[in-house]
Length: 163
Image (cartoon, rainbow, N blue to C red; front, side, top):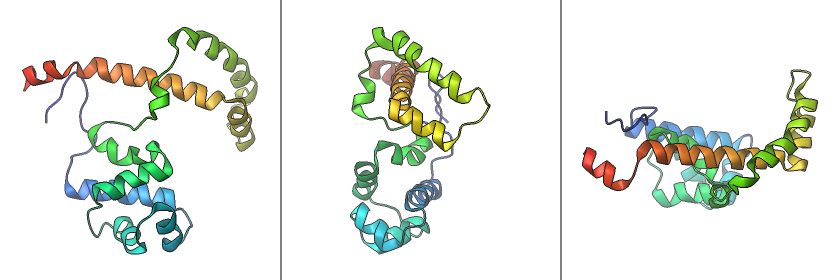
């Protein structure tokens, strides 16, 4: 297995692992909705939903990308995990680094207050969501994770030299 500066595949990349990841993704998004409801929102046939969920066929690249388009980039994370990656909104990459300390300082008292009981309740999450704290922290984490991964993988020219 090719390993470059600490990044490696999380699961062996095979047709079976791909189908399993797609199945997990579809099941997670679909929840209790019917195949027809899922297909309508996703923009595919109900047969595609059934085949993807039951690992009966490979999902086309267009249908996979449509999942990300309709349900957000994070919907692709289970599949991207096969290559040790995550999907991130473009906006999440553009973080004003100089504002990070103030942003964290602004969110920290709320986190302390809500989580001091050792629980993370639905009400706590709703409060954090209303305050924009979750998106704030996720944006910072995504920016740092992207920077770390870019640092680990190096430049394209470094990758060519390692091959």
